[in-house]
Amino acid sequence: MARLLALLANRPDLTARLLACEPETFSAARREGESWGWGLGFHHHGELLLKRRPVEASHALMLGKMLGDVVTDLVIASIQPTDATTAHSSESTAPFRYQDWLFTASGTIGDGSGLRAQVLESLPEFLRRNLRSNSDNELIFHLFLSFLHDAGKLEHPGVLPRAAFAALAATRDLLLRFGRESSGSAPSINALLATPEAIFAARFGGPLAYRVLSGRAGVARLFAGGDERRLPEQELESCRVAMVASDFEGDVVPEGWIPVADGAMLALTRTDALHEDSSLR
Image (cartoon, rainbow, N blue to C red; front, side, top):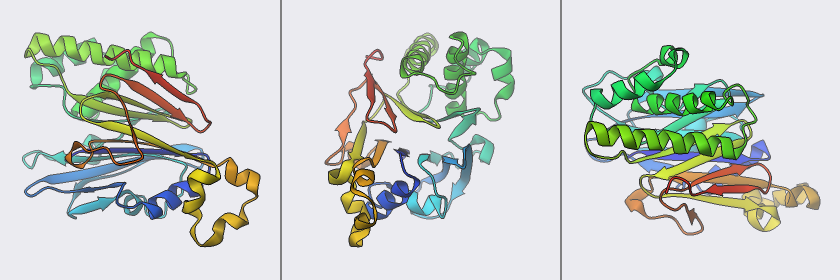
């Protein structure tokens, strides 16, 4: 099964503490006969970097082990089943990066070449040239980028949620139209995006949910063994980590997570701001 995960914290150590405290929450198990790969995008020393493994032999993956010794306040992860008949490479493995954007999605755009050709034709030439694989994931990302470009926001790393929401909604609308014209069916896709300062999520597929831990009440258990005493009270109260996940085992959203309505979008930042939009419904 596919699994999408993202974490955004206002302290780099909170990511590792959360993953150590809840390893099973941020994990995936390979199904019998399934082949899979994984990729990470993360914020490190002011840069967005990628770490990708197109083919994975283990039967279970945990985000903490995937990150290894990377210290980060932002990570977006994609665990995807792969077609055993297809050659795999890092270039075709999500997440994908363009400037200050990271992207991954679960699901596919439809039934193949006809729909792909329509999407490709709709892209500006400079984005079409930037494609490095035949991945639906990468193609959807570039369609999103094309709508940011149309709005004059592609070169602005501090994109406001409403601009990202508008580009996501336009991406979904065009995929729906092309899908109906090509095969009569609509794509079922969940998407996660990240910039150095925010996480964006859109649900037009299976279950997607988010959770925010903040203040002493939310993060004290992450400082097991009395570590919280080493932080001034004010600093502990200011701690915040937000997370988004998609494609839960058995489509069951874990306790403590807040489901995102089908057709809705959300943005999470390092502050207390939570932005929601339902224009995909």
